[in-house]
Image (tube, rainbow, N blue to C red; front, side, top):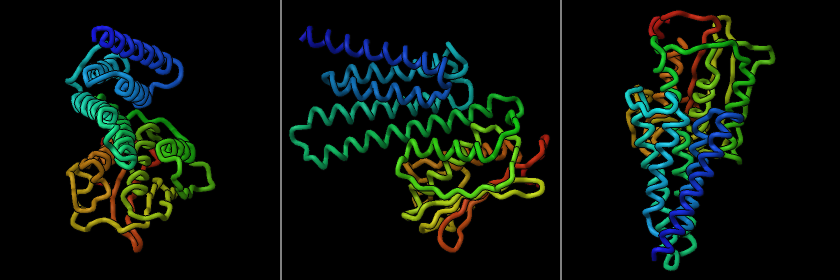
Length: 314
């Protein structure tokens, strides 16, 4: 028994050490995207749950991973500061999902002999879905802290090529949904718009993911960019069952709806609420409505810098 505990502990510490070392290398030389580092630790959770006995090592590695991600790889670096907006939610959310992932994997192993192949597949799909949801939540909440860390709750905008921002958003989404088909229409003219590209990519990813998952249609969603004299419009259109008219007025409020809302996945309305926060910080405008064959989400970005102009006055 002691030997088994020793081996499990050594295996757990070794994997966590390797994950942390790889995370430092990835963070320093490849990308500072915390969500990618979270994925690395999630893989470690699954391996530890798979090759150790019981829940002890999985629970320990979950707590360790969450603390490492927050301490080493999330601003402010090398200290835990939960006074900044969004960080308590990130910490608690990541902890809950990693614990659920560990528990589900351990359950699969302990009950594997009495589970059917279909039940095993369902458990594994739950692990994959929870991991994907975790990454999306981390990306969204880090987007909010990126805005709230500024004094004015505005964003640092730099001129960005619209076509490149759209292409990057679609590419990131397809990493999560490899079989996804998205129809993109962009102007042939060169468009350079002031924006925080990372945040606008997150808005596009949220809206396109909603169209893919919640529209209830096999028809490919469309993303159309339209050039106007003083602004650029981004329109995401799906061809599903549309939005419940009763939900539309509050759809960006963050309220959880269980009435067919496009953002009810996992019972959270956080994605669309964050979209509005980001667009408001850009002095833009966002709306949701139905069209003849589905739902439509539209947002605008001004072509010129605008200082402290509330969207309601535009």
